[in-house]
Length: 165
Picture 1 (cartoon, rainbow, N blue to C red):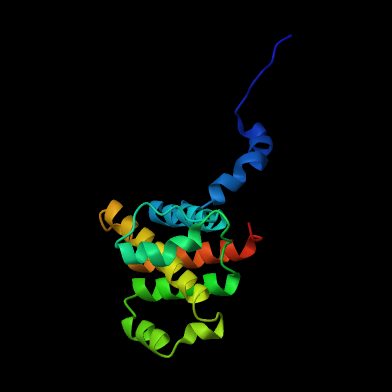
Picture 2: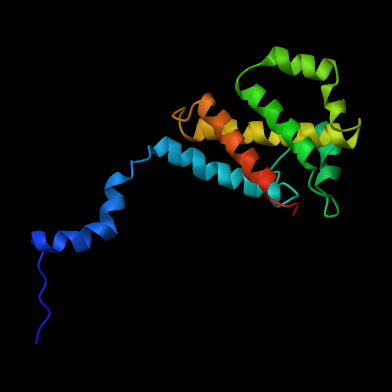
């Protein structure tokens, strides 16, 4: 008694049902896969508050934002994070007039009062923007700004689906 294996036509019906779906899967371009995976990492970073800031650009910036990252600090609420994502997308799209209008007319007041709330928006926006610019640099410009805008949209959707952590 032995096991006979045949790959003849009579066995295709058995094998095909298990593997047919693989023929229907379309390959995902590397850049698309990269955007998807990094969006998961960005959302995870923002879920695990406080942010891990490697360095500050100035002493004034550190003095302003470091209290928002203390051990007793909490993750900004969804509306604040949404505004930070919006500003970061505008930065990447170079929509400087929109940013200027937003800040000049204090549109952030629609979601948060002055002080800590606006500082949270600016901190997260800067973090996101710096992360995206680092990706452009690390990939030698192969990942373009429109792809990074898409990445931020995906990360925002993921983050908003997470409970506060």
